[in-house]
Length: 252
Image (cartoon, rainbow, N blue to C red; front, side, top):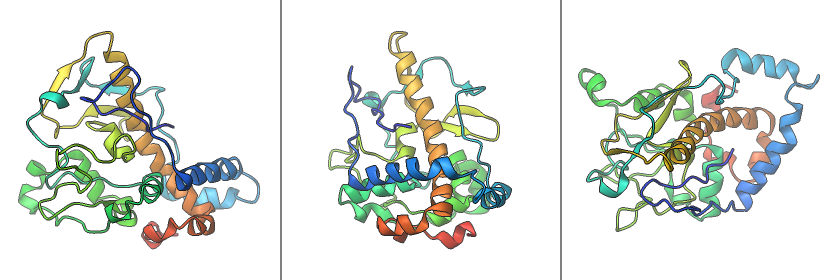
């Protein structure tokens, strides 16, 4: 799936596209090589064991509910807030994101520094759905996050407070503020985005579709990572990507 999605507020008729670098291209080639063999006779036992621990049903548009008013998109141009800062602005990274940052020479943005948990009494009030999901996920422990400064602000931001990675930004950034609740198979609008608008009908289907697909992509990349680590760990090491993953957290 593609994550070359435009940031709302910087939309063009043909938005700039993400150009994958050598690590990311090698990762995609590796996926194309290993994915046809997951259910081969020699791998069936390993897959059955994995399925006991992980749900490998990929998210898709089939049967997906979109619990968002038609055409609702973020109004970044007129927003006075900054969604890339604060205790809930945690961007979990996937292998694809890691490869992209290495290609860009931005390994400095790969971080294991986690913000401290909020007091229990404030958890329901201050934690967003995404923060609760991240903090309770083994993926959050196994993979790095996008680096933040002492104020909790994303270090990929420019002096003008624009994304310095776009259009080569992480999958979680590409789908924001849309989020996927896989348990209920529904895409919803993240509570952390306070600036919204209803797009014109000629624009809404395109803008909404991009964000919905990016929400599915962010989830499906996580499933890919499990399979990469289960079936191609040595190859990931050869690519220099395994050093950024705490494999033991996944119980392999």
